[in-house]
Image (cartoon, rainbow, N blue to C red; front, top):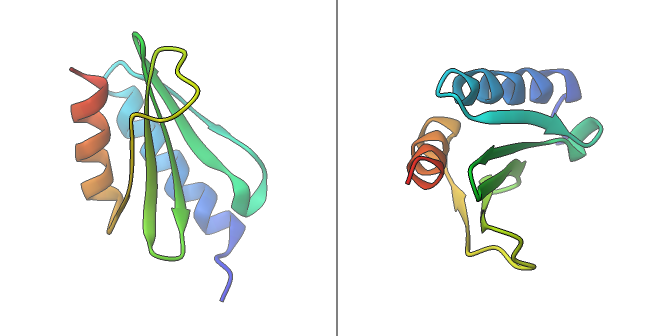
Length: 89
């Protein structure tokens, strides 16, 4: 069953709000169910989206062509912990 785009947008907006509260530049990119959160702090970036198995997170450093790490995390709460840890290093 496909996720309701409006509900998905609300979840992403909540993530952006929580990241922004930690002085991290965060915004939603993409359209519909292809939307994702892009967050940046200094030379570290993260892309966070939902996939069928949970929350997909890619961790980037500088201008690298490939992520330094990528993982599926079971919830937005746990994903935010990982994201904040990476971005605040």
